[in-house]
Amino acid sequence: MATTREQIEELRKEVQRLKAESTETRRILREHGLWPPARSKKTAHLSERERARLILRQAQIVREMTLPERALAAEWQALPPAERQEVEDALRHVKIDPPLSQLIHDLRGSDR
Image (tube, rainbow, N blue to C red; front, side, top):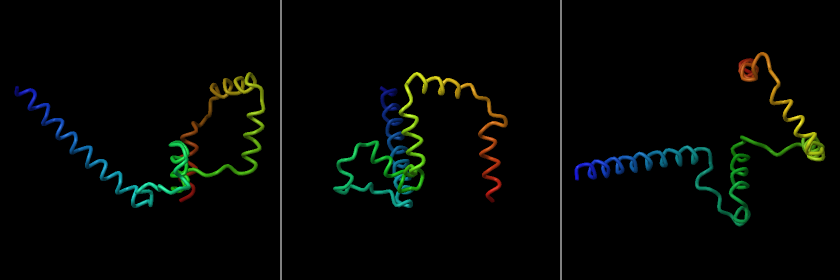
């Protein structure tokens, strides 16, 4: 019997923690103008993935591709699947020295 009461108490504490976490998440989203989620007629027909992309664009985390990027993507998509696979396989074995993470770190440091 005591075990059940202990489990209920643990569950009650977990629910309280999740409520607090949800409240904090909403506060952060509200600060960035992303809460409540837009529910306009314009976005009602969008899939969950498309709505997520819209939110990321509004937060300026992602952007639309430029015309040159679209042309390059179309060129890539036009390649035969075997050729694309060959390129992907080759890229998996590329060794970058210094590591890409170090290059990004160094570039970010030079912006300041």
